[in-house]
Length: 191
Image (cartoon, rainbow, N blue to C red; front, side, top):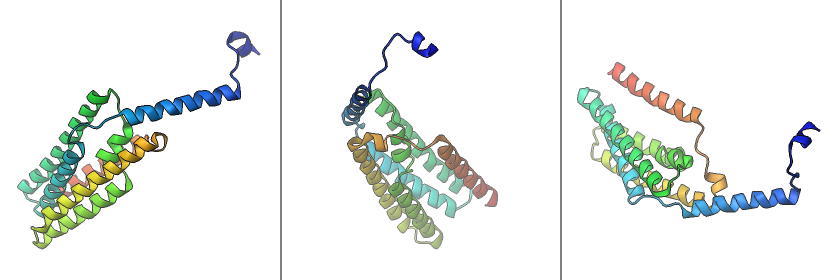
């Protein structure tokens, strides 16, 4: 009763609430369809992933100082390309999109994750087995499919933003980063 006395606005009806929700969903769909990716977005991400896979596989197979430096350079290339593309997206659209960062850049979408693991495993095996010619092929193929998975997510997002707009939970991203750092640390200690 006290809340009714404090509020001078009348309660909205169910039909008004449905109309407001429909308007909000339409606005979200309009926004999603008006967003644009920066030029060379997919090609730069695919190339960065290819570099990261090739340098990572080579670095793991050659766990000397130069191999670890090479591995680190590959990770740095990917991080820089991802950061630049996110900044360009923000400047172009004036908005952040969590799903873009997690699903497309960090590869948490199913196809991107599976592709990355398969390409990295094949490239690493090739580097260990002395079939170094196969390492860049696996890396380029992995980067191309990774970029294609990002394009697929983008099209899905623009068609149904409510279903695809969420990024991964912060906890998932933090756990992935901690595991990656622990893996790299173990490689350095075990070499």
